[in-house]
View 1 (cartoon, rainbow, N blue to C red):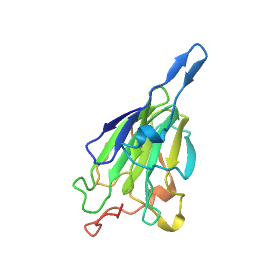
View 2: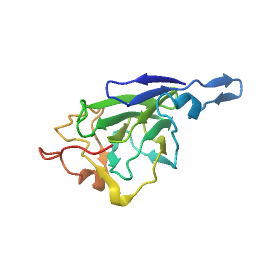
View 3: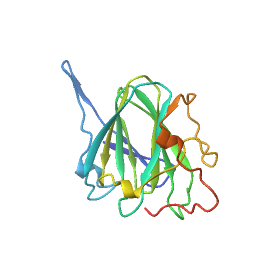
View 4: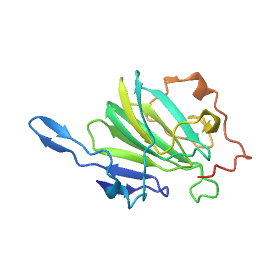
Length: 183
């Protein structure tokens, strides 16, 4: 595994090394020893999968507030997505900046998203499947989100947005009073 920093502190692209032979391939998704430089004592509490049926659909931008703030390791296991993380950490030098990468089942990349970031993605293909590893279990009382189309973020989605859930469409726009979240 190789760790590649992004312009946002703590947000890391994790490159895996598939082992291939005539039968197929094997990929190590996580190794505590190899990831310890990125985050010592990283422990996953919950693992989820999502399936997005239609190209152009957007899921997100979601996060959890303390004491349920979570880090995530994201991987595309079928299709392709444009995966985005937004720095919402209070007093961060990159507050409200976003970084996006394309994740694909055919490429050995993953996205490590630390606490204090909102996360979402746009499906670039029909039938996109995502795998999420979480450090904390989901907690409805501490969930939060920001709009995928918030002008304060100006996320450059690669495709026209064709579908958003009602819940995500109803997320609030950021205003001058938004000071960020504790990580």
